[in-house]
Image (tube, rainbow, N blue to C red):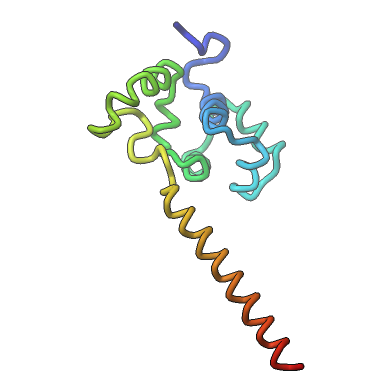
Length: 134
């Protein structure tokens, strides 16, 4: 199966677009991460080539390596996801290895709880101050 029939196989902009879509990221979100606008992302995704410095920035924003973008194919992705569960215990050899998840979800939960606790502490401190001032 060839999913890239409508574009040249090394069309870097299309590869960026597909990786962004697979990560369920909108052009606006990628634009914000890169400090640009949606129109610039659209233009970049329509470009056949991109300079290495820009590619490195885009890769970082997408949470993958520049090599993963360069080597991206629909076939690799399908193969990666088909084999994901088989390899998840052994360490996958897919193109996103060590770059697939750019954060630890548990860290994010802990961070959220710490912010909530701090917010509650701030409220208590404020209320105590109000009571003391009466």
